[in-house]
Image 1 (tube, rainbow, N blue to C red):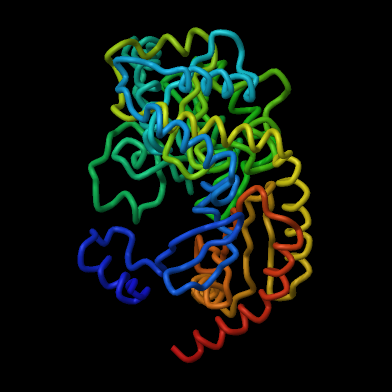
Image 2: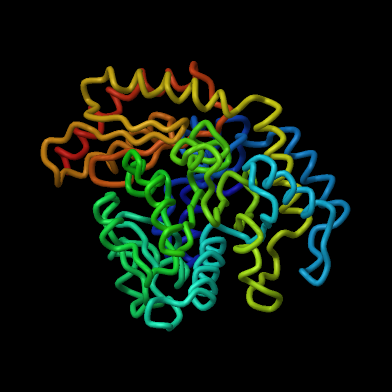
Length: 416
């Protein structure tokens, strides 16, 4: 007889480090856009493993690719290479339309990809001295940014609650407002790199102001700094394009480096950094960076299968169409104050009784009880990042249920 969900949750609490808090559910299987818990209850997953399960659960092409590769070769170390890793690098450079001389580094996560980008900035600062003749060590990042939880990526992350327990962090990082005015004030010859997310998912799905990234490209080029774009959450079709950056830069313009992860593996851990052009690609040399598991044959086979499904099934277009449909329906609800939609990355600001009211977390709980998985990024903000295969009909079921879910959440708050 299998253990019940409550027994498994207690087992988790007794044996696993509590850095994630107490998990809400024990999930045992998934199919398409649905997951099932240990008690057999089914949920429409509108979070997709936080933008990871880009092609849903148990897609037959992905399962076949992973199963076949697992039966051949899973890990080889980076003393060697594999056809799968080489093929995935070709795919990424092709779909991003990266110019000649661009290269790919594979890691295991978005944090690791951003660690590599941070080191790239350090190497650039050493190779391109500041006005005082000393290496540039200054990196600009944005307020409300989230780039990861390792020490380097955490230094780039702006949230004090994440940073404070681990300070002092690696130095030289200045967080600035996401405004062109602040950019023009701070970006000068002392800066080695600027790192930005084209859409800040963890802050509630906020895109950069219009013209910000284009101006950032002009200024970084003028002052000899790198422009690094973190597409860990927004990339791989999430916003309806392979890269969210494409819509924010003039045609023919590129960042100097792009970091990817989350949706790239379709559920399998993998991250990547693309260095754009031969000059940037030559900054990190043999022995200056590495990873044991990054780019192994199993991970790269999973990622290649994911990219193939997104391309072959027209999921970029689906993200655009279904995302717009969902956002329009949400905007018609009186309980919703604002909707920010970029493909199938959607932030929903709820109507609250006060700014301090923790309505969104209560809505997440009520939604789960109603059979929907969503996420709160703040007291009044809900985030959706469902699999790119989701249909309009499936999203309609959530919209129809949401007023009742919000009502249940308000009732729960009133009684607490």
